[in-house]
Length: 534
Image (cartoon, rainbow, N blue to C red; front, side):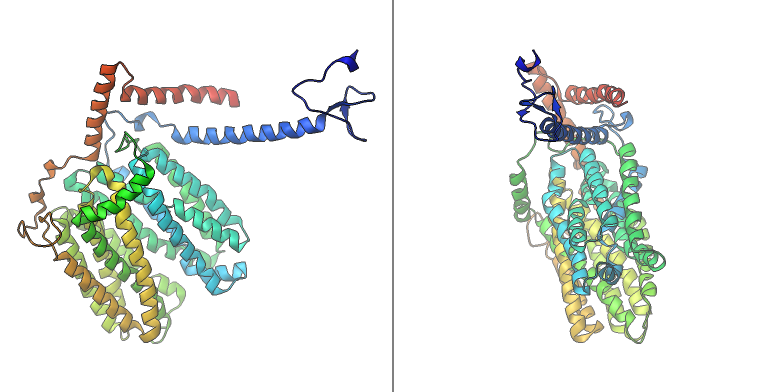
């Protein structure tokens, strides 16, 4: 009989409560469908979530055939890919600056004070610093294509919360999270340093650096204009769409390059190695100090300029003040051509010296004429933008040559110093302007530039030590002997060949075979999973 049969071991047995549907009918304890239904729902939700995550990862990690790594015929770093990296850098770093011109509107929207709204850029800068320190060094371990695509997908997806939320704490939290993962341009720069020929490295870097600086300026301009004529959320929806566009373009066109450390590294040892580099390489320390001082004058100028132009004798409207960004954009567009003519031909420290000279001349003119004519700040904007851009490109060109297999960590050390300089410039500039006005804050910038110039003269470009001019005064880059420098990709190829030989002798699977095998598995899985899903 049915009541004598044992209950299924896969379904929990409970006593049916009044009004509860039971299996088997009649009286007595029966198998309840509610408990099993809840378990099934949880199990199904878990499987569904795992399936979605696996599906997304499978799509992101799958590589189009023309983008796959082939040691016999590696993908070439073309001008088109260089421009794509520059475009991605522009609208990725812009995420940090869209909020700057609309903080007062965000304060009204979320019903908070202006002081609370000012926490948004502070939190985003803190998140960006965390990403620089904890995520960027991973570029020396992971394959850059998959790492970059995952970060962009994560940022774009989280950005949707900023477009929709009406809660200020939630907006603040998501701003921090998205800022942490908005470090993809800092992964692209070392990759450009890996792939570009040494005698063209400065030109290739200048395109991406120009994109970074352009993003800082164009974000303020677009945000101000869109918010002026639409809603503040329009700029966030715009950024949401552009980030997914970048993801799609990079998925189709970004080649897959091997890790510069195929053997792997310990994460915490890798972080500690950044500190050791500072005590090991005089060139890196020199670049970090110069980067710290020059970035401080950039943020000090653009922060205090708003106060100067909004007060008598100018009293400009916010949209007119925002148009000053066009001056910087013009200077940035010159960067790649200037790099080809100057930075690629001379040693990095000489190009840094020239850039600092432009900054010094422009800052002196703008500081001591800015209260009398608007031409002074205009000249200053153009001079410091072209000067800082050229000095940053030259610094990166120099430091990327010191440890080709650790360029992401080298870039992390440099960018942390630049970031700290930006914070210092904002704080000092605002405080000095509040105390004594435009002239005092500008005079501090003059002092910072002079300090950076002194650092340039501490050591010769040919001196391997910390201080002195041992090695001569030659400034021509051809003396560097570009052929002597082996690119990181070539080093990786050598390591792959050595690893293949070792595994071949042991009868194991070679690195290339392993790479091809993994990709073939993905190619086989993709159509099967598609059939299953349909």
